[in-house]
Every structure is written in C-alpha cells, then in structure tokens.
Length: 68
Length: 469
Image (cartoon, rainbow over all chains, first blue to last red; front, side):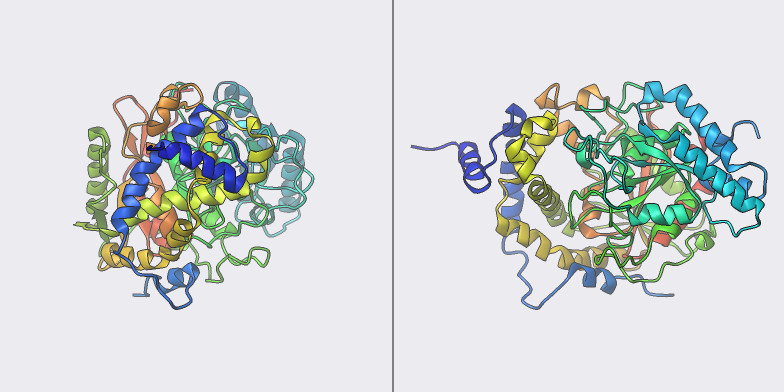
C-alpha cells in the first residue's frame, strides 16, 4: 500500500530530531519539498564533488576583482 | 536648520562637525519624530532615551574640548533588536528571548560607539530574523511608512521603516536571504549586504552561520559607505571575519561610470516579474547608461543550482540552532516561524553538505558567467510589487505561504554566493510603493556596488522622497 511521503517526512523528523509538527502550517511548509526535490534531482550528475580540501572563504578571495 | 531629523547620516555628522547642530539637538529631533510617528509605524521595540541623551552629551563635550571626532559623531542610530549590548535585553523579536540580557556587546556596536554614533535603542524585526515580510506576532507588525496597509519587508522591518520615516538617520540590519535589501527596497531606502565575512558577527544573534551578514540601512549610498567603513574589517572575536584590508569606500564615490560594464542575467531574476517592476528597472538602467555605463544581457545557468541549494542551507542551520526550543516549547514561536523551522528538519544531511560543498564551485561559475568583462550585476530587488501585510500573513492564512516566500526570490541567490549587494530606491509602483534596484559585484568589491549606487543617486531623487506620514 502506498504511503503519503509527507507522513513519512513527519515520522522521520520525529524519529531523528524529536520535533513534532507544530501546527497545520508546519505541514504546509513541507508542501514546498516535492518541487525542491525535483530541482535537486535535476542537478544530479551535473557537478562532481571536489576531492581536494576547500573553503568557501578561499573561493571568495580567489574571485576578487583584479586591480585595473 | 528646520528639522534636524530630516538630515541623512552624513549630513548629520557634517552638521555636528561644523558646529551647526549639537548631538543633543540631533537626538532630541529624532526622539520627537519617533514620538510623533512611531505609534502608527511600530518600528521601535525599545527606546533608550536617557542613554542616548547621555551619549549625545558626551559627544558635545568632546567637540567642545577639541577632541578628534569620529566619522559618525552625533549621528542618531537605532538597530535591529539582535545586536547584543552587555546587560541590556535583546529580544530578537521573539517571546522566547523577551527577557534575554546579553552577556557581551557586539563588535559592530563597539565600532559604531567608537565612531561617535548615538545608539538610541532597538528596532522591530521578524521573529529571530526569519521572514522576508517583517510580520511579528509578539511585538506587532511594523508598517510601511508609504502606506500602513503594506508590509515593510523583513526581516529588518524597523530598520527599513524607521530610516524611511526619518525616525533616525541610519540603522543596522542583518541579511541572510535579503533581510537588509528587502526592507530597503520596500521602504525606499538604501541597504547594503557586504561580502560574506566582510563584517564581524560577534555578539550578533545567529540565524545561519554560513549566510548571515551585518550591514547598514541608510538614506543614501554615501551614508552606507561611511557606516560600512566603520563596521567592516577583521575582528579577532569573529574568526570567520576576513582579513582583507578595508578600503576608503567614500573616497571611491566618484560618480564616474565611464568604462563600467553592467551585466543583467537573463535567468531567474525576471521569472514572473511584474510589468511595472520591469519598466522601473529598465528606466534605472537608462540612468546608468546616461552616466557612461554599458549594459549587456548575460546567461547565468548556474543560477538554477544556486536557487536550489540556497533553499537548503539557511533552513537546516536555523533548524539546528532552534532544535531545543522547537522540542521544548514550539508554541512560543509564531505559527509561520515554527512551520518554517519545522521544514528544516526534513532535509537530509547529505544534501546540506552537498549544498555547502558546491558553494565555492558555483561562485566561480557565476563569476565567470556574470563578471567576465563586467563589473556589476543589476537586477530588480523584488520581482513583484510590494504586497500588503494581509496578503502575506501566514499566521492568518497558510494559503499565503507561496506569496510570502516569493518576496525574497531575487535576493537569496547572493547570500549563497556570498557577493556584496546593495539595494537602492528606483521609483514607485502603480500603488505608490517603492521599488528597488539591486547591484552586486565580485567578492570584496563592496565599494564597487556603492560607487555605482551613488552615481545612480546623483541623477535620481527617489532616495530623497519623504513618505506622507
């Protein structure tokens, strides 16, 4: 029998975090997720993990505007 | 001088430095304006009247003694109620922290104090800085000075409304997904989110460790430049703050855009944009062209991934910060905030790590797409006209969720990318509410954003308009 993925998400949140759905709007907040998951799924395979150590702060410095 | 409260931050500092106004007179003018108008706006959470007058008197004594004056000496400021001052309450706009007395003082407040600014108290904000409209169930919604039925933008609601209404000369806001630029755009003032790591966050309520930023809301780009020059720079108390030297932002405001190239991304920022916003934006581009800038449309395919990943980072980090409170007393949050936080617990850890690990590569890609041959990126700050408080109130009607979240669609990408971004007023929509022009530049080119914004403001007067209070 198929289960509602939102029910599954609620169970997983309670299981992992001990947080209960606070109100009806909380359930509504999960409504965004199918679209977000679809967006993330569309990105699969598009970028590889970089194996070398990296910091975002280093990327900021590397992309600084060069002096004219 | 007829009403000292109408002076911008740099005008007030200069009037004080020239001896044309005392700091006490500047503060009293602000206090009078707050008394006259804040009953309807609800921008102020706590007014520190006596402390402000004492600080002003100290500035007046220093000037009389011939002491060297700071760049913000005598300037009345107030700040979003999330900047800690030791011994005073920082509510963070919440019931949970209604009585929280901060154990430390934020570095940015210490720097503003040292520059001579007068801290008059704390400002309304979205609860824990977590909505883009400024709704607050605990202290009451802040109202847009251009029309009280409309939202102020958030989360720095009191900062935007108060600067627009001339209750004080300038304010600090914070920006994790647009919380400086949105109220700046929606209330018709100038707001700067600096490069990620540019300004210390020590002593500042955290929302998202990866994407929080401190910055000014003020009347003009020149005002923002002066304040940024005071607050930016390495802070030993914040190991994430950058050691890059802080340039003289004000000295770079030449007004000269000859040779400047402006890129306008074709993707993302115009998806579903309302016609009046697009027309206002095109008019703003014409002003930049009139000063010698070239404008080109560019393709930025990286924005699709940026848009997906930015949705993960702040939600997961906020959920982690609030987990104990969400377990113990979720009913102390406003409905919309507990709902928003709740969603953060559903996001798998591996996707959060993926989002963080791709931040650097996506920054590199975006810079290649947008800044190769170009100096700044321009977009509208909002795609939509300013919404009313009622039509973005999730607590009253969860059906307003999508409209509420759409407010920050154009600002969020720059938080993920960590880029400096400013919003300046670019006119009014057909309902008389302000619209904003957003300008972004490469990392640490905060001064480039301010220079273009200042040049734009030399040929427009949107920033000088006074709301009809």
